[in-house]
Image (cartoon, rainbow, N blue to C red):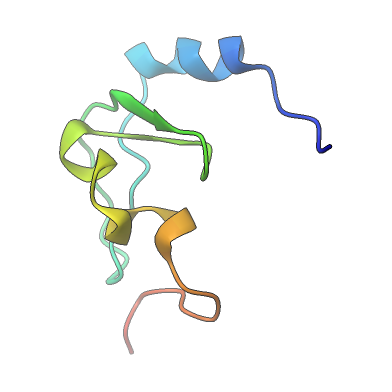
Length: 68
């Protein structure tokens, strides 16, 4: 089984972290993060926590965003 990073360090960042979601057009979100995704291991604001388009774990293999 793959070792997991210590959660305490990650969760302590919540108070000062911004949403780590990035849209398919490479647009960052600068809202305060409040939800941690265990799949992507990133913090998201409440609006993007439920939107799989903003999660790296929801992007299909070969798709990287930044249409162009």
